[in-house]
Amino acid sequence: MEGLEWLYREGVSESLSTTGTVLGQATYDPRNIGHVLDEETWAQAYEIAQTRSTGQAYALTGSNAFRGLAGDDVNRQVKRTAESWGVGGIIGGTMDPLDPDAYKEFRESSPMLASLRSGTSDLGARWYLDPDIVIGKAAGAYRQAFTIASLTRRLERTSSTR
Image: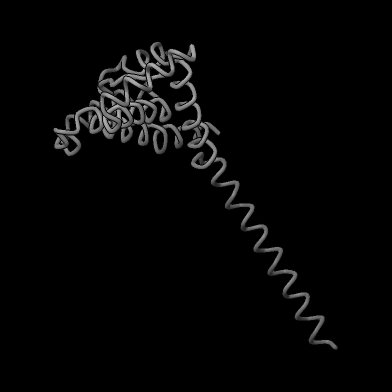
């Protein structure tokens, strides 16, 4: 089990978190997209991925993408509406994903949104990409295929004896 957990952490979680952090940098600074190809950016993102989950990385990316695409007028209106409903803290800000404390700041400014986004992403990654589950699904598919093949052979034998 330890080996599978290591495989998930190193092969899935940290890889996705690193990629999410780099993509978050692209949404944070869309005018300078060249850093997506920069080796230093990837190294820094990988270092951050040691303590930032996949969900946390993609929560920041999503927040930055929304803020960048919506424009200032829409962002102000959304913030006013949320504050009038008494949930002003659900609206995130634009934060530099290469800042190791960015998710902490996002969680403090928008606890509900941060938890929802990061938790959903982490659950999805665990559910669909965890090696335990992938191996379990493969084993189940193998058993099912073996059972179907066995039944098919029995039916063929039965029909050939008639």
